Each structure stands twice: as structure tokens, then as C-alpha cells.
Image (cartoon, rainbow over all chains, first blue to last red; front, side):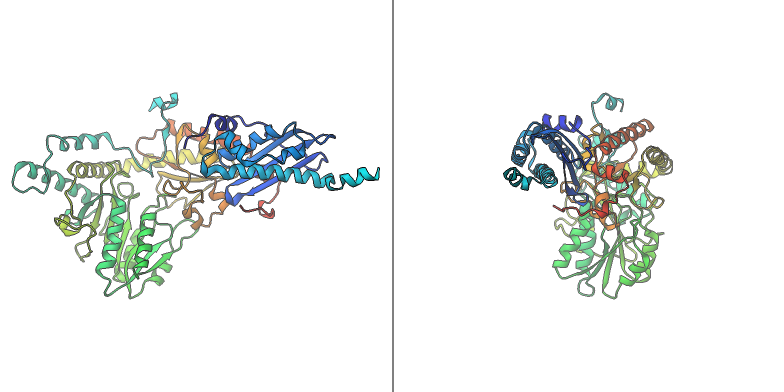
Length: 137
Length: 409
């Protein structure tokens, strides 16, 4: 199986490996996959007061494509609003890394990881209540 | 093999998949492609006699390796064909009287698939389980044998985890119960001592390219006393005592014979050397890395196989980082699928650990230098990948991975 240079670069020099304190209010954590399936991704976003993702970190247990997919999305989400980040589609990831068909599930997992991180952030920060709060003011 | 270090070719550590043909074997084969090209079945002229002599010498070399008579050895295309012929051949010959076959769940796919086909034809098959060490339970075997059992097929050395089944004990049980005993010795012949008489083996499959002989040739030992009879799968000119028609490939036969001869002559010293290399790999790895587990029995194994689970690091991801090494994650036959190895699962290895396994195959051309390089390369990569593994992080924080509700996908 031949992998693209971009994929190999992300595998060999992964960006943003690490962990944020998951209890911080500005941090959203997504943990997706399962060890028994051979893939687990942990993706974290750190969101500023404006709702913009200022930093992102990941850790992944999985094949090279899974590591590269999660590394790539940590780069992509930075500077985006949480809602924009949640719009990232697995097909964009698969295309960017030229994933072979048997590895498409890695990009799906990366998309799920972002969505899970955004959803965790929102639930911690009561995003659903945001409009209500503003209305009350 | 110094070029390897200069990034020209990876170090070969996949001797269970195939072995390089020994240069001495190639030398023995070459004349039979050109000068001595005769058809070994030609009875009327010198070319045929010359080729026939070469084939019969090779047959004798194979027989000698396993303590058989040369008349009991037939040539096939490889161990897959030998396994098919042994099991289907015996099952079909005796089907009017007996319809039961016993094998084991960790057998090679070609044995399991053969048995599945026979099940579709109406045969009953018992698949014995194995313990955590990969070995069958002899009491279970005894209990499984019935009046209807025609044949027991248990491999000698497992291709994935290298464990050696108790062949002599199985042979004794089968002989006592008057059931034929076939063993797939593709990974064992030429590697561990085998004697068809001492071990009461009735049929044995051998592969050329697993013992430093050429690809495309194998052999099947078929006992003459007490006689084992089989229905041939390939019909034609009646070569190989009618059990396998087709013109014998003289150069390949010569190569297999020579390969067996070398294995027999060098087995004791080579086993000692492989054990030293295997221990060197294992000890150095264990000293450097925590949470590494050996799959299969520690002692009852062929030393040229080390199947290790590097916990918290996925095997395929690990292999991408060790391009300087040619190793296998799980069996090469099943690694096209993303499922964890059925052999490791049969041992009760948990799925998450099964995903972290590498098979290190050590063989005739492996050096101490290769081992040291491989240990260091793998350990460095495992350390790097653990630093980015969420499972490693959780384990270090004392979180029990089983306490988490994972979303299976």
C-alpha cells in the first residue's frame, strides 16, 4: 500500500500531540473509537472567550492513517469557531491525505472526534442556553 | 546484509512467511534447468534416467529428514496442496465407514478451509480449542475421538505464534485409537526433530519455501505400514503412486531435497543459534520496555518465532514506523483484513492486545547485529507511539481501560 507524502509527514512529524487539562472550562474533549477495534482518538480543543479555537491537541492509538488524520484536524480546527470546526467532513480529510479505501474509516473517526470535542465544550459551557442568557440581559 | 543499514533493503524478519532459497540449494538446482533438463518420467533414454535419479535422490533426502522410507514421500506443489490432499484424500477414501475429522481452531487457513468444505460435503468436523499457551488439551482430543473419526489433523509448529504441539503424544493417542494422524509440518520440518515412526505420524505436509528451498514445491509423507490410502485430487498419468499425477518439476524436487539435507545436517547448531538470537531479542526488549507480552508458550516453541504484543501501540501503526524491518503484524495471510488475528483470539488474547502484536521471524541469515538493530528500532518507535497513545496515557494515570464505555465502531 502506497501512502501519500502528506500522510507520511503527519505520521512521522505529528502536529499538536499532547493533552489539555480536561476539566478546564475552555477545553472540549472528544474520545472516540475503541481499543478492541484498533482505533482510539482523543481530540481536545481550547476555546477562547470569542468561541474561537485557539489551540488543539490529540493522542491516537491506531494505524498511521488514524494518526495522520487526527494530526491533520488539529491543524485545521485552529482559528475556526467551534461551529465551523464541527462542519469539517471526513471526505475533506480523506482527500487531503489521499487515504486508500480501506482507511476511510480513519477519517470518519477524526470527524467524529471533532464533533465529540465540540459537543463536550458546548455542554460544559451551556452553549444551548447562550441565547437565553443574552435575552435575559 | 550490511546494505540494509544504508536504507537499501529492510532487514528480513518474516521467516514464517517465506525463507530465502539457500544459495547451496540454488546451486544444486541450476543444472536441472538446462543441461539435465529431462522428463523424470521418460523411461527410454538417458535424459529421463538422469532426471529420475535426481528426483529419487531428493525423495530420499526428504525421507531421511523425517525418518521415513523414500517410497512414502510424494511431491506436491506445496503445503497447501499437501494439506488438502491429506485431509480430503483420507476423508473421501474412508467416507463409507467414517465421516468425522478432528482438527484445531489455530490451524492454518488451508486446513480450516479444507475442513469447512468437507463439512459442506456432509462430514463432521470437531475443532479443538487451545489453552492460553496455544497448545491443545490431550484429554479433549481423547474425548473427541469416536468410532466415526477417520483422521486427526494437528499442526506441528504454529505459523503465527510458533508453539510446538505435543506431536508424539497426539500420535500415540491416534495409533491406540486406530485413527490416522496428519500433521501440517510446514513450519516444523527442518526446524525441529521429527520422526514419523517415533511420533506415529501417518501423514505429514512439508513446504519447500519454509525451509530454505524453492517456492512451488512441497511434499506429503503417506505411511505405507499400516497403509494409508487416499483419493487423488489430481488425475492423469498416475505419477507419485497414483496419488498426484503430473510431471515432476525436477529442479524444484532437487531443491527441496537439498534444502532438507542441509536442514538435517545443521539442525542442532542452527537451533542453538536461533535460541541465542531469540533470547537476545526477548531479553533486550523486556529490559527496555514495560508492558510487552509474549503470545504462545514461552518454552514449548520454535525459537525462530517471537510473537509479541506491545501494549497500547497498534501493530499496523507500529509497522509504518519501522520500515527498516520486514516483519508481520498477525499472519500475512490474514493481515489484508483489519480483524485481529484469529489465532491470538483463540488464545484468549484480548482484542486490544491482539491489535498490538508483531511477529518477529528469525532465521538462517539473521545476525546478532540484525537483532540488536531491530530491538532498538522497535523499542524506539514503541516509545514514540506510546507518547501519542491515549491508552498509554490512561494506563499511566491508573485508569482501567475496561472501565470505559467505548463506542465500538
